[in-house]
Image 1 (cartoon, one colour):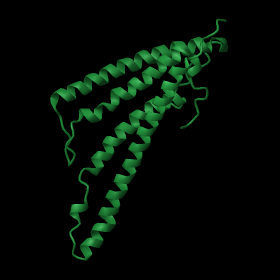
Image 2 (tube, helix red, strand yellow):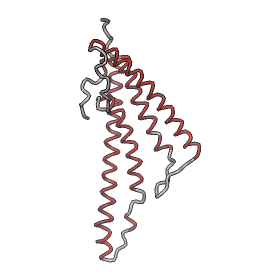
Image 3 (cartoon, rainbow, N blue to C red):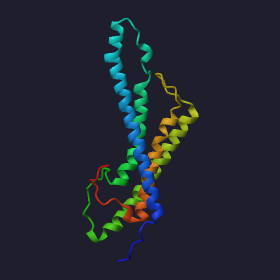
Length: 186
């Protein structure tokens, strides 16, 4: 059997740094969501009634659009999660036909699967990018207190899919990059 070459150190380092960036994006997005929603609930359910009880109007403390901002942050966190799940092997993988081929063929079968997954995710990335571009051209903006161009939120879609596609391409080229245990959680 032919010996497979190991991934170059620069590639491994780049992918590890990219993973760290995605983890930080997800952590910051979900932390901001928690803070926004806690602020919103505490303000509406505790602070405003207390202020109202002493004759102070607390409406100026309301962060208008906080729920919509939380949804936008959720999109970024979720699509960063696609790359995180791919890198750690925590993505959902169907087990149908897992043992159709002998174990000796695992590396080759995985490489073929990685190439197909790369191709699929690349196609999805292109479609998502076209969707974002159409939104950009339309000039669509958010509402409910959040006047942001929607394409700036939607950009997370093609970036998330492209990130996972890039990793599957790396797995196909250098199988030693593939996560060993699919049950690992970040």
